[in-house]
Picture 1: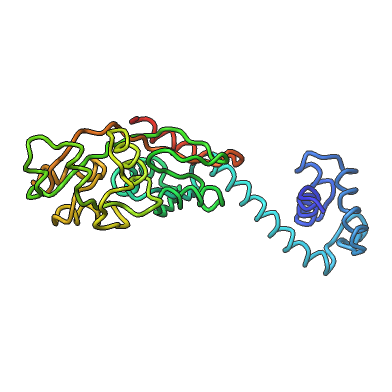
Picture 2: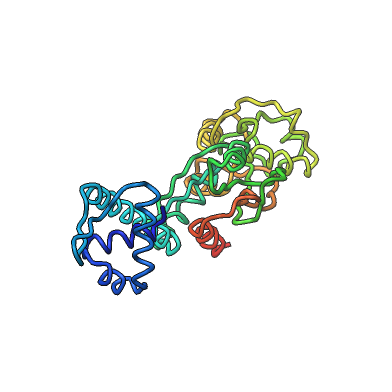
Amino acid sequence: MTLEQLRIFVAVAEREHVTRASEALHLTQSAVSAAVAALEARYDTRLFDRVGRRIELTSAGHIFLEEARAVLARAASAELSLSELGSLERGAINIHASLTVTSYWLPVRLARFHLAHPGIRLHVSVGNTREVADAVLAGRADIGFVEGEIDVPALSLAPIGEDRLMLVASPRHPLALKDVVEVADLQSASWILREQGSGTRSELAARLKALGLEPDAFKVALELPSVEAVRAAIQAGAGIGGISNLAAEPAIELGALAPVGPALPPRPFQVLRHRERRPSRATETLVSLCRESY
């Protein structure tokens, strides 16, 4: 049974006339008759009674007419859905992003996308870099945003933005009161760090190693699961740490944090996609919007 057969049957049933149905469908009368006959033969059920030169629906035909109309309505709805998805009138994007990206970089861009395409639903989940990569690999996320690098062959990475890690401490911390902070001062300090698996932690370690520090030998006072928690512990004087400039600069302006040590180089934000899954038009549009400001 095909949609074309259903359309022909409904046209004949509504007009109770083969010739008029063929004219409405721009088909030959023989093609219309053949389609109806094929349905009746395939399912061994008479759909029409031939009464003289007229045709009338049988009781089976009346029942089938309602079902055929329902199927055609659903097909039309499906066709409209595809059209709207292609034109960005409706759809959804499942996004997984690391905490720093979600808290400080992504919201403005999602807001801009929503204003441009209000029919697209945006579902955002938060995790560390490893968890975001796993979600994209498993198909739970259409797209991922993380800070720093990640080596997963099945995923494509592309720079989409950046921040800069800053070494900070409470303004009352001894290192914040020094004119010059040496490498040895940083090595011997107590540190507040993100949890293992965090992109911020791995990126901070790589940059500190480049300065001659040994992060594996740090005295770690606290390991905390979010940048906000790390910032609060640093502000309370529990130790020093490295957090995004997006989180640090407002606190520095308020006098709640102070920069310590050397400036660190920029850190890229990456967009993650599965190499073997074709992104939707909505996903591609979101990525393009995020790139506009980079």
